[in-house]
Amino acid sequence: MTELDNTPQDVSFRTGYVAIVGRPNVGKSTLLNRLVGQKVSIVSRKAQTTRHRIAGILTTDTAQLVFVDTPGFQTTHRNALNRAMNRNVVNALSDVDAVALMLEAGRFGEEDRAVIRLLPDGVPVVVVINKVDRLNDKSRLLPFIAQLQAETGLSEFVPISAEKGQGVDALVTLLRQLLPEGAPIYAPDDITDRSERFLAAEFLREKIFRQLGEELPYGVAVEIEKFEQKGALRHIHAAIIVDKDNHKGIVIGEKGARLKRIGADARRDLESLFGGKVFLELWVKVKSGWADDERAIKSLGYE
Image 1 (cartoon, one colour):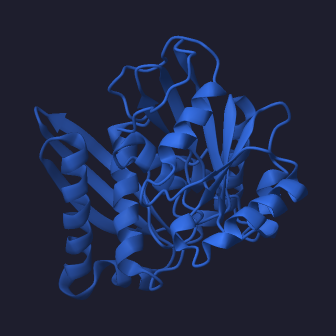
Image 2 (image 1 turned 180 degrees about the vertical axis):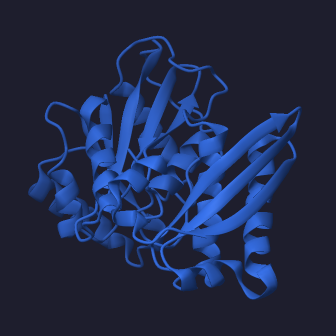
């Protein structure tokens, strides 16, 4: 759990919502998990991994910050799934107390500008410059910030490495000051607003993306068909949804080896998250064109 260091003289309790926004693959989910101190948002190298709005909750002695992770704003893909993801970004910005706009150190392009155009008026924005640890020439950072300030008119910049935790405490301290005074919304030990059922689907999808890499196109989803808890044991039955018949064989693998590996990796993470044993049963279904079918999108939980 990230703790606030060097808290200012203002010791009143503050509570509020902070949207984390940015282009795809800039590190939003990695930052959310770092802030919360536990994985609640899935991460992979595959672009557009995050599809849903998910909140991570950080409670300290002086504040409760509810960080809203959003999908990367889509500027090229135009199917129903991408439209739903973009709606999630816009909706997340409609009622927050502050925005953490994530950019990548040394890189600023049209995808970033498209996100900036969505920023609401009157809401304070902190520009979070991520991946500073990967910047070969650190002397480029200050000119880069000056360029951003000149082009965007924004004034608050925090360089960080979400992966390594550098600068994250300073970011939390700054964001806390932007929140209104108020009592906490969630219990002190809550880390997310999402259900275990939702998290199970997301963790499974992460393992699919990580194991299949570029073998499987973007059109894969997970549907939890049954989720039951008996004592500390959770029974989870899940369908992996693919777009084409040949994708089914890719997911299953030779003699079912890949599907078993996906299940084993997901079960290990879920047992760590839930603090109990998980029985996980998986199978693969083909739903052609699901990513461009509004009804299918809604049935799979996309808003």
